[in-house]
Length: 181
Image (cartoon, rainbow, N blue to C red; front, side, top):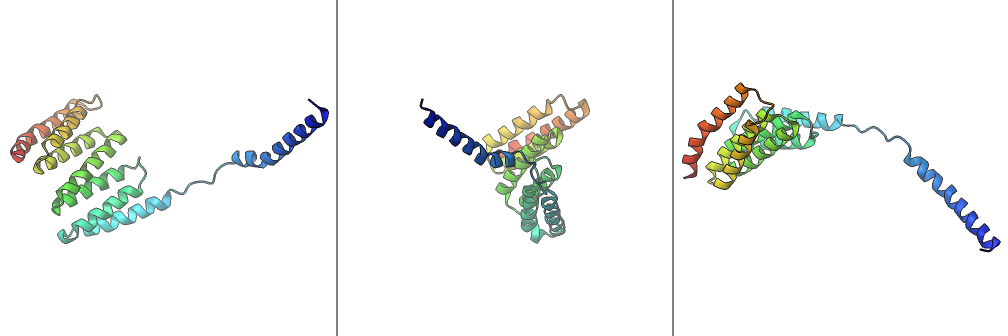
């Protein structure tokens, strides 16, 4: 290689390194802290509104939507998200919108599962199975019942917790069989 070409390549490489240095240095800086409290405060305000509306039958649907929004505004690891999804599901069910109530109950069960709350997840799956049976969705009811039964076998449960879940599942099994006919 010629000396002149080599010098030009060397100079170009140095120029590139100097130009890229600020970009690389800025990538090494610490990021600004993320403000999570704003979302939590917003979610708490929505939940407070939902609490006040959930006392009147005519406002169940609006309260349910507020609980849904509160759950959506929360981080995945926030247990209040599960509580609000479950409350929204019951309100929708009581307002006559059973299909939406079923979907919300399944979301609540999944969120409880993600949190590792075996008892709440199993109870939510049982409730969802009952709603699915009322809607004459037998395959879905069986799937949800199967999920609850699997959770009832968890080694995280003691014998009294396990037996309480099994009693609840067996007690509602007869009701769901009648509802699916």
